[in-house]
Length: 306
Image (cartoon, rainbow, N blue to C red):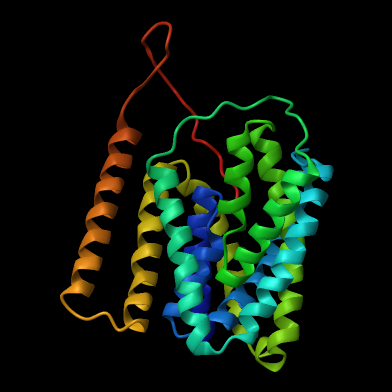
């Protein structure tokens, strides 16, 4: 019961982040699970199995509101599923000693991306209807995103959504809906890969999966309220820094970096993190001006998908 409660709290924390940012459920949940003592491969397996349910519900919701381009879903999700299966089997085949630093390194990279993305992001222009992305562009993007997502415990949204938004070819709501729907294929494929690679260990992780699902359901309405109260730029910068700092500690311990170098590394990370959070806070509080009249206008937050 105590374990189930801990994993439920992890699910609550991850969903609060994901609901407010539109991304980072997998990265946040995996980081928290590893910190609580769950193995790297087991943590990623549990997160992806829990995401089978959450992404299915998310896909249905986006389909209801007509936010999905099914051609985009298939062109991105198919290769993503292949990459996720490969990433899951690779992570499952590694020993715990090798899997932990690999996941920590991937999470540090993703955390740094989230930190920079939300603190230093620049406005982008998007088409209303948008034009189709070619399969030559979407296939390698999905393959890479799926592999990183499964082997690192998260990253599908930061890799695929941000890339598609930066292209400016598709309306944001369509990008978000299509990526969310395609993530269901990624989650199913990654779960199958972990089932093949971990077998009995995978089935024994049901308290983690149930806890994450229950926590996510509990936190969903709170996250919906939170996004109206806290700037996504500020929250994203804060969460990205937490992910970088916690996983960098694992790398420092793994490579046996001693004082004063370890202290220097942590100091640099904290100083950069605090500076970027401060910058994001100042930007979020600054008035936005219309270019023609110089009058303050309300600028909606940029939506990002998981």
